[in-house]
Image 1 (cartoon, rainbow, N blue to C red):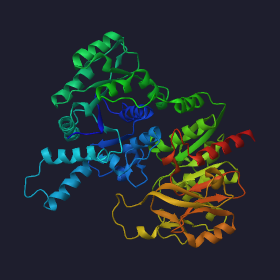
Image 2: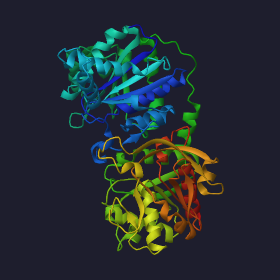
Image 3: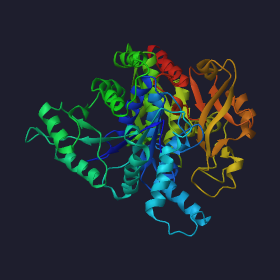
Image 4: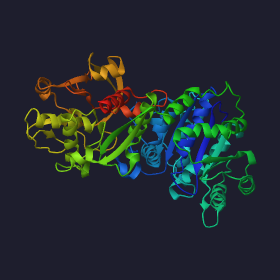
Length: 538
């Protein structure tokens, strides 16, 4: 299979959470800056069809693409670094691979053959490897293989990578192995043995890595690099040091300094289309590291013990804060720990309050107390998805006097369901992939805070929800001062609510954080941070 597209596979060894996604995104950024078109995909070895039904504590946030795919949070990194959207095709799990093969078998597509891991599962994996490169849109497709080499569930993916070398030919195929060089304090020594064993496992699976990227807390001396090159059978200049960085956004520049992009281009026989232009990136980093002001913003949610549950929100604050040279000191506060007796002590000294998305009743009461505090104390407030719904419920109870106002998610029998299950959701009995998902249009009212943020009437944002604002209460709410300033033009679904006599009180049904990137900070986050700065000055 002669391929005009070049394929790079990134595997990991020694331990998980080394940052394969960040290395993939950084390499993609460097190649993109040289004029190549690049996309990145993630292959996850778990049996779930997608992460949509996983608890955030299990796997961090579930990231949603424009086309409505519920995906791994690494796709968020890919989009934030490359500034280009991903899709359903960019995240494949073992569950989806097996589901596809079993569906074909049930249809009789294998003509009575015995269906096996090799060749049927590995062929399905490979067809998904190549799918994004088949239309010629991309010069380079980077594929991150989740998990660690040696994991039982990763074996079919590793075997498919081995076979891909023969399909694609040596100049169109490259394997980067990310590994850890631990430092033993007692011995005052960097140890290469875990990496040697990790590469040995790859070799046993028939794969010789072309480049080693070594995560380390200390610089790698030349003798350590030589040892790694000798025992792992890679060229000395293909042993790349990946020092721990202050911020993930340093990594592209660190990898450029280590010449990772040059090594990749040399191996793949790629001629650079232009000089690396990372001026915008450096400008962003300059502002990020040299802020002129600082604000304290509370992120109130129920999954705060694992910050990755709110990865996109946290990164959106980073992008937006840097754009106005403000350091956002983000305080993650558990909504379960907030109640009527302690909300003031928990929320004082905050210049802005964001109530985060989530599902279910746990921590709901704490979110209600938080919204009331932000509304009454005139503190800039931003509610996302459930955060917006909580704001509606709080307003209905404490301003309209509907004491039992609620969401039918929390109380199916409430007499005042100001938030209710969407009509098309009522007939659905399956959990996975059945919410309102992906990008939808929203029309904003001129003169509103959301309109002044975006600077246009029609916007497109991504969704992930089952419950919505109940339009039966719209007139009542608007008369009392809570305005619907954004609606879906086809369905009339209320997408944005604002309170007029408040410095900055905005709730959105969509997830604006998903579309925030380094080069395009999300406008609502920028305006929210600015409102927090103004509040602090007052």
